[in-house]
Image (cartoon, rainbow, N blue to C red; front, side, top):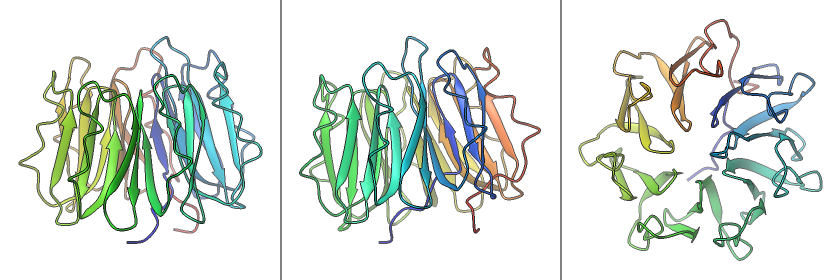
Length: 282
C-alpha cells in the first residue's frame, strides 16, 4: 500500500476548494470567516475543507515542502498548523485539522470534547479522515484506528481489514476494500450506509449524511440524504475523483474541470468555469 496522494478538490459545509496543477488554489462559496481567502496560496499539493453546522468553516493546504497553512474560522485552534512539518497528507473535519507525517504518525488540532483529536499514539497510518465527531486512520496493513464519538457505532472497525480507503462522515464511517467493494457502519437514518452492493470502486467520500463512490469506469454512485440533490450523480462520467460535503458533492473530471450538485445557496456549486484542476506534477 502506497501513501495516499493529495486531494485536488474538497467540499466543505458551504464552500468548495480546488487545487490547480500549477499549485495555486481556488475557493468559492460562503466566506464569512475567510475560508475562501486562498488567492495568495502557492506550491500547494493537497487541499482540505472543514466545516461546522453553524456555518463557520476553514480551509487547509499542504505545501510541497511538507508544511501546512490554513484559513477561516479558528475558534478551537483548528487553523493553528503553522508549526507542522514533514506532513504528507491532510484532512479537515468539523472544528479540527488532522495530518499524517512522513513517519506515519498523526497530528491533530481543534475541538477535542469527544476525544476526536487523541491520535498521538497512532503509527503506520497512510490515510486519515476527519468526520464531524470522530477521526479514522487507515494503517499500512489495511486495518484501521479510530477515536471520538461512537454513539452510532461509527468507530466499531476492529474487524475491518484489507482496506485501501476510509471516509468519515457526520455519524457514519465508510471503508473501501482492496477488491473494490465497500463497507459502512454508523448512523443509517438516511441509508448512507447502504453500500453493500457497490462493486468496482476506486475511491469513496463521506458527506454529512450521504456517501459517494467513484467506480473504475469513471462513473459515480451515491446513497443517503438527497434533499438538496447531493446524490444526483448518476449521469456523471469521466470522473477522476470525488468529494462529498455537508449537502453538496464535487467531481473532478479527467479534463481538469469540475462538476457539482447539491446545495448551492452560497454559490459553492458555481464551479463550471474552473479549469486546470489537478494534482501538481500529474
